[in-house]
Length: 122
Image (cartoon, rainbow, N blue to C red; front, side, top):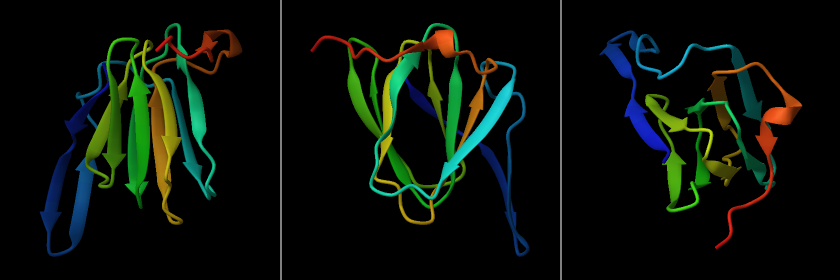
């Protein structure tokens, strides 16, 4: 099941510095980010192999997750919150704020064959 990890953040009078180091359960092979989203729903898939880490580095969005047993909605609204999505986690991203930037770190390079679009049976 998907879960949130808190990223280490250093704060002083100059601002904040958030670090992603030795906390992800995979080696990063791909990074992408989603922004400028209208009222569309993004995602709608799970994977055969890919593990992902989703961080809303600006603004906020929600991620619906279903691992075939449990369903949950995660509200990503701070850049120090990192949502880990396992391959079995069928997910959709929605309710993006106008300024939202959702960064995703992935354990695998893009492979069209890795995507499973079929939802779990309810």
